[in-house]
Length: 144
Image (cartoon, rainbow, N blue to C red; front, side):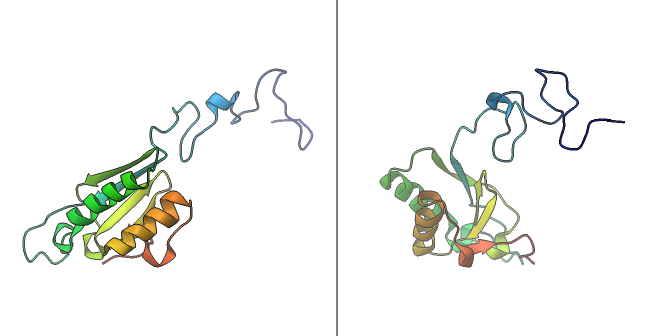
């Protein structure tokens, strides 16, 4: 049992308390663990472009214009000069009935963007300004 007074650390001098990074290099990054490398991208956007068979009850993002919207987003991000941002097409993100969907990491924020205007809003408010777009966000409880 630790006999240290409250607020005092029982670690020997020069040794970080348990669970404390010993240096900034060992500090966790967003959603990371001590020792993880810095993220390669500041933001990494995955846009679902999944295609399901015609008539599938959940639909698919591709049939809802996902490829056109993803290509638009990639071109617009380049036009805006966004550094450290990668826009990728992805396979199924398993939320196609809400789509077209995308998720932005490292935050793990999900959006349903159905128009180029929605894409512009996410680019400007989330990726440029660092905010969020509540009316386009998907929450974990959203779904079938």
